Amino acid sequence: MRYYLIVISLLVFVLGSCNDGNRCYESVDTLMMSSFSINGFIKIDSLTVKGLDRNDVGDTLVYDISSTLTKRYSLPLSLSADSTGFVIKVNGKTDTLYVRHAMIMKFISEFCGFAPNYVISGSRHTLGIDSVKITDSKVNPQSIAKLTNDQNISIYFNAATH
Amino acid sequence: MIKILVSILTLLLINSFSGFAQKPKADIWRYEGPRVGMDLSRFMLPYMQTAKRNGWEIQADVPYKGNFFPTFEMGMQWFDDKHDTFHYKNSGSYARLGIDMNIVKFESLKDHDFVFVGFRYGYSMFQQETESIATSNYWGSITTSLPRHDMTAHWGELVFGMKGELLANFFFGWSLRAKFPLAVTKDANIQPYIIPGIGKTGGGTPFDFSVGVYYRFPIFRTKTIPKPIKMGGAKHPGLNDENDQNSQDYGGSQSGGSQNYNRR
Image (cartoon, rainbow over all chains, first blue to last red; front, side):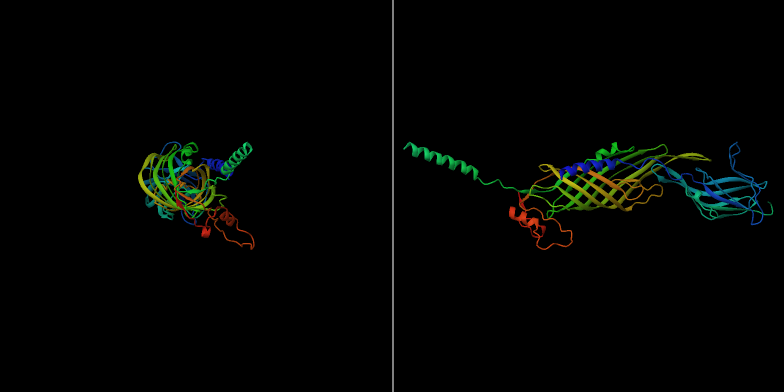
């Protein structure tokens, strides 16, 4: 009995010493999934998105010159401000979109750390944008895994000006 | 005459030696009492993990009806985990209440080695805080912190283990534990990934192990070997119960697993 006690104790100690590694296997990038469309008939021939007041080389978030009816891109939101501005150029016409949000840092895991989580509360935009529909106000690291036809916001441009 | 004297002396000597030989054996008693010990695995933890994890835990049990051991455990833990993008601290105290049940037969009055299964209810009071949370994206970078948050946790444990008497009244033992968190205080920013008394909570059922040394205070004594607990199943007629054999050897009562204890 005592022999088993000691042998099994050693085994328990060895098993207890094992750990499951120290790598992060989860997404830590928080991006707002956004769709861009004019209407069901007019294609977007070119789309460029930049952050407001970000004009340096490399500041372009989206540059897409393929012709499609709808485009989907994930956009980063501000970490320190309660709204984020984007300059959106569609078919040569430039508009500005402001997204209002609240942010908290949320823990993912021991090895992934924290990621910002947002709740979108509203938007403002210039006249070239017809409407902005918030379909899912929660933006978190899982948002970039959203399937086609599922996004955080849908941006509809004014057909008359595009 | 000399022959008679020699014969008498010889008879007296033989009688005296036979008297030594017939001296009654010393009484054999089974000593029982509360057992108090320390979980050594808590001191090993700092060497098994990258994060600083320190603590202590004391464990105590009392025999009840031979095979049951109501158990009380309490301890404290300090956890300090520094990563590149955050610095997490967590500390607190905990207590567990439960019972262990011996599942093997004691072979003799002197045999106190046992294998047990048991359960615990645990409660922990702790606090956590996170500093230097750093993140960055297209818009820049920020460093923030989360203030100290007082929290509590309740959980249940299933326990399996062994304890053996290595020296008189000194025991060594280990246990494996599966832990089932029942309720933990909510935190909007971070649910604790380690809880004093439970251990790491990330992913599935937390498992833990414990290796301890214990001292038994031999307060009670008995001449009865605890009767093994019947686990159910068919009993074969005509087979002698080995415990009855023990009863005959030591003249103890075996009824219902209870024992007659004498205070030492």
